[in-house]
Image (cartoon, rainbow, N blue to C red):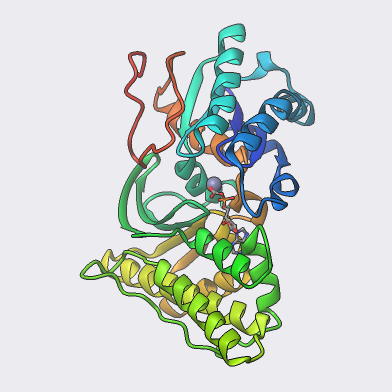
Length: 347
Ligand code: KG4
Ligand code: ZN
């Protein structure tokens, strides 16, 4: 029988300080998340400098707690994994420095992980039967990508946003209709009381690229609608605006994803990222996939938003391929999916 592989994973790319222990890639032994949402709420969004400072304050506690919850010690770990991009550079540096320090002091190998690769891999945690190839829609605060997952760690981006990410659109529209930060969950909640057909907002097509997205026009359409209501002295029904906006975003995401599945003759589909926890979006995909006979996978909400368990899962498959990083591993804020660290000690 093969020896179990335990990975201590660290995530600090944005406003969550997180650590987890993951066994054999798919068993989460612990998953500790310290969210900074309350801290950033008064500014209406993430303040990078404040995020970095809070990560520094919390990182050791969160790591210790992850080991304690898993009833493990550092010497039980086979690797220490960390998100090294993309994300806020100051925030990423905290996790990368902590992971390097642990690796240096304990001699445990270091494995750097791409944040989006982590989001995609979150699907493996609760869906033990899911294996590549499949198409994954990654919709988070910073990214909207339609990705062909060819194999573990092998990706082809088949569609991307030309402007705002889906989560960014949720956050901006939420601010405009007075719901505040973080916008996604608030729009999700209030939309349940609204009529998604109350106002027609545009479903953008992007030139000749059938899988790309554009959400900035939709955001402007919502702002124009709000201004015109104010000018005419008409009442703004917040729940209707939220539901109508949300349904425009979902329509486009579903349409493009189903088109890609058809054209790539792919029968397996997954969603990932913070926006993937949206209840209407999950229902819409559930329905569309059932209609087309596609196997549909999604992580639980806690594994959709930023967490370290997903980083441990992604790291496991890299670790098994022999990927190890050296102490020259650095934070790369604009790291592209599929791009690997090319430092001297990359193996
Ligand atoms: O994946 P994530 O935690 O961080 C990034 O990597 O960006 O995603 C955060 C984004 C935010 O824009 C947030 O508003 C959005 O995910 N989000 C949601 C929901 N929960 C979080 N959007 C729509 N509906 C939700 N329930
Ligand atoms: Zn994320």
